[in-house]
Length: 309
Image (cartoon, rainbow, N blue to C red):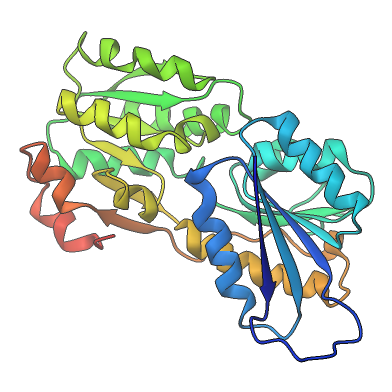
């Protein structure tokens, strides 16, 4: 478990009558740290001051321990970088507002009654990743015409999985693509991926929202590269880490968007009255180096439309 502290704004006035309020930040692993960076960047644009203390912990129990500690220390808010972090924070605390950043399929978690009026003590930024699963498959087919078989990398028990699979299967039926499912709920289960890749010829692999997969992306991309299979990721940051293609809001942009909501909470606005937000526009990003390493060339049209990471 790691803890880091930032003081915002970075320029402080001497002899301050009271220290800035504490905001606890919960993140499950390195795959989501760019959301933290975006939050810090975004807060610099607002006058509200806060002391951010970040807890990076790999398990729900460790995240819950951090959340309880922050509430005991008087944190005015907890900022959670995904679903497992939000679940842990709400289960371990009783009063402190919880602001989620990049939660997939947010209405399905049962954290709030309505998107436009959440009520209670939780709101935040939904990343839209579950709803975009089918669109990611479409971009893969456009980038690599002739795609007929795709391996889906997912975590069965996480809440966004049913919604993501529904959207993905609907698109696969239209595009006439066969989907094979590879589940992993623990990091050690990822070791079976090379054996699965050797059993069939896949034209691509597609990632669904999952804290296990997102936080172990480096070893996943290594296995896929050895098998010659391009990965379709969730966001710009994953193309920087080796995914060939991605479609979705970037982690940093999600953090920057959440900064505006946190600033309102710091100013005294009730979090339950803040509507859940979504990104303005998902981004299509393409990693030319990843395609080149695989000996593949994406279609000219996708190269024209996509941004580089």
